[in-house]
Length: 198
Length: 198
Image 1 (cartoon, helix red, strand yellow):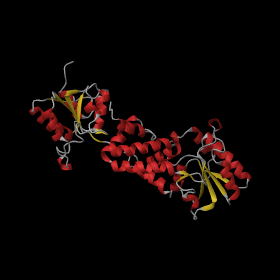
Image 2 (image 1 turned 180 degrees about the horizontal axis):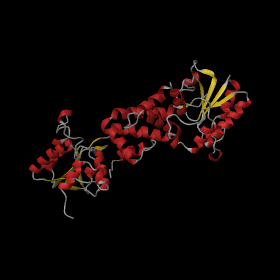
Image 3 (image 1 turned 120 degrees about the horizontal axis):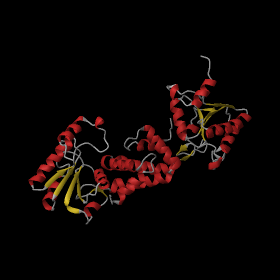
Image 4 (image 1 turned 45 degrees about the vertical axis):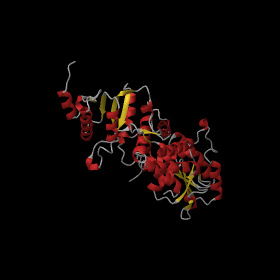
C-alpha cells in the first residue's frame, strides 16, 4: 500500500465525482500529477470559487454566480413564454436543441411528499407570484414524464390553467431513430392511441 | 447558451480530467453544485495542495510529498530486491496483487529516442548509482512487454547483468481466465513455444 498521505487523500477526494470509483480516482490522480499539473491547479481554483459563489437565481432558481441569471436579465427573451424544467441542466439541453426564446423556471426536483419534497421545496410559491405578476401567455411544462414528474406537471398545470394561462407539455411518443422492437410497451401503446394523420 | 461565466469556466476546467468531454464535464459540474458542495470544496483544497506539493521521490522517482517516499524509508523492505516499473501506478498494482517486499524504481516512461526520451529522462544514471552502491541481489524488470518496453528492459538488464546482478522479468504467456480463441497470435505463439511440463 502507498503510505503517502497526500496522494491517498487526493485519490479519496476525487471519489466525490459522480461515477468515479477507487480505480478511476487513482487513474485521474496520476494523470493530473504526471501529465497536467497546470490543469489540476486551474481546476482547483475554479472549483473552489464555483462551490462558494454559484447560487440559485432569485427569479428562475437556476444555478448562477449572479443575483439574477443571464437568461432572466436578457432583454431579447420573450416574457410571455415560461418553460418549467426540473434541473438547470435541462435548460442547457433545451437551449442547444431548440430555438425557444422565452424564460425558464427551475423546480430543482419533483413533488415527492414521502421524501419531504413539497410545493415549497420546488419554489412553487415563487412561481405562483410570477404567474400572477407577469404577462405570461403560455406555460410550457418540460418535465420528465415519470410518475412523480407527471404528478408535478399536473399540479402546476391545474393552478396555471385556473388563472387562465395556456398550459402545454412536451409531446410524448416514439423517440426519433428508435426501433419499435426495443421500445417499452407503455410508450408504444401511448403513441399508438395518440396517432396522428399524416 | 448559458452566459454565466463562472459555471462555463467550471465546466471547461473539468475537461482536464482524463476521458471527460463536454457532456460529462457538465454532468459533473451540476452534480457537485446541486448535490455535493462540501465534496467539491474538499476536492479543490486537496487538489491544489497535491499539484504543488507532490514531487518525485529522490531515491525511486515515484510520486510523493516527501523527499524520500514511504516505501524507500520502510525498514522492513528487502534492500536486496529492486523492481523496475514504468509508472508510479504500477507500484500500487504490484503491492495490491503480490507479496513482494523489496524496493522499487520508477522509470516514468520507456526509451524512445524519436520522442526525446533517452536514458537521462528515465533516471538511468540514478539507477546505475543505486546498482553500484547498494547490495542488490536481484533486479526485477516489471516493464510492459511492448516494443519500446522490451527495448528498455533489455537496455537496463544488460547493464545490470554486466555488474553480476541477477536480472529477471515477469513471465509472459496466456493471462488467467482468457479464452484462447480471443488471444492475439503473438502471445499464443510465444506461450506455445515456451510451454512447460505439468
